[in-house]
Image 1: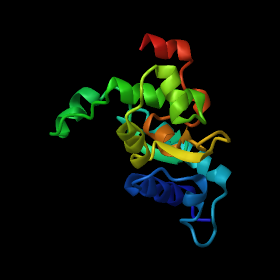
Image 2: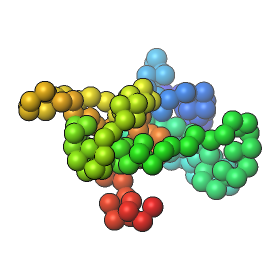
Image 3: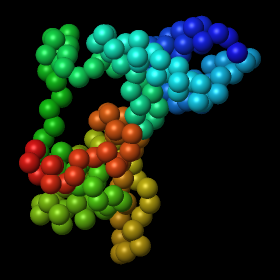
Length: 175
């Protein structure tokens, strides 16, 4: 295997240019000969993060793998880079997403029963198109309604490794 400094630089470079999070296996596969072990890659990622302590960015692990991102607290300045207004989500959109995240797998009828109103089909379509939710099957009931669940892309967007990291429902109510 290459020396740790070289291997570390390759890992860092890959994470910088990757458009999506990289798994440990993705990183190991960068090397043709003398592949580092997944454990070695994890250790090198930790070393990189230690070297970033005084920087504004870090390597984080999300559901799909590892990525480099800006540390919290720089939003005020970075939003000025994006000339377009930030995406605003409607209350109905967010309520639907929260119900799917906490009650999955769930049908559209289940969501409507919880919210007490009809779900706009565009909300479900937009969530599927953004790849935050997916159809994972059909309920064994009349009409065979689709069962909806969140995806790794949903977890990645909210910096979560798993659904276990969602705040308790009582904290969601306070939001």
